[in-house]
Image 1 (cartoon, one colour):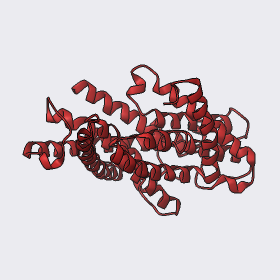
Image 2 (cartoon, one colour):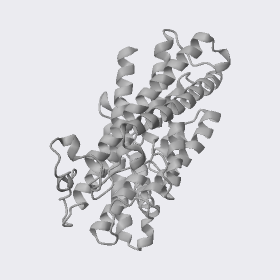
Image 3 (tube, helix red, strand yellow):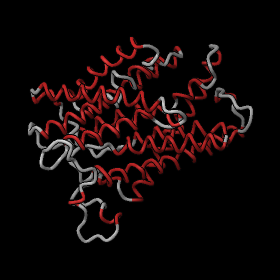
Image 4 (cartoon, one colour):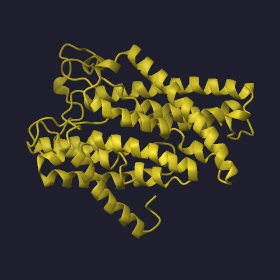
Length: 355
């Protein structure tokens, strides 16, 4: 996208300037919730027409793509803290337009452009660009960059720490013990222990795997009748559950202890879609579930189990990222984004090896 010509690149660039500012103005998490609504609305258009422009250009493009809008909100928050306009650089809920400081919105624009360019660059890396989630990786890189630039404890540029070792547990002797959640910082207290991660990862993973398989099959069969590619729906299938998970963040913003699991659902849905054809065997095609025989249903069951395993993996990666970068930090470095890109790479690479 946005690389076919100089004109289309500049068109997207200008949209990213605005998208990053909008993300900062309404707050990073509100921007991400809007991404979720965009995904769900775009899926309706996609299922009806086979045209994925809503997903490609709106939900995951410079309009409300997380690498532009959410990242702009994240950068705006730590910049506003650096300038002493606010006190908490991790606050990605507050709509920054309320500060009445245009320079904050300009920083959102700057990081919107940064995200736009970096995502395009990642997606064009040979092999890797097609075997990772370039949007999620860009969100991570953007957050790390914003911390480094504006997140210094003495409010000096380019002095931000990614680990903040001054807040490690003092009596700890191992690195895992030093970064363990505690009074010095934690992400989500209700999903940081192994049992909690197993439950959230497996159950939301199965949840996402189910809807992803259903959409890939039913919409895929519909597209085949329309003369479109049989796997077109499957190529977007894991984004629907992700959209639901993104909308759930709205309730987290209202101080409800909601599960944060979009990294789980997007990874698990991808796992189900990637591995269902593998376990089904040669000459696979997506067909309506009305035509499935006993073997197809049994393999769908296996695919859901695989989705649950990948969901657990993504949940664990997110908690690890939180302990490394988020918990003690001065700004928001997104644990789910850190989990999504590496989980995506693992799922897609394993599927390619086993195909």
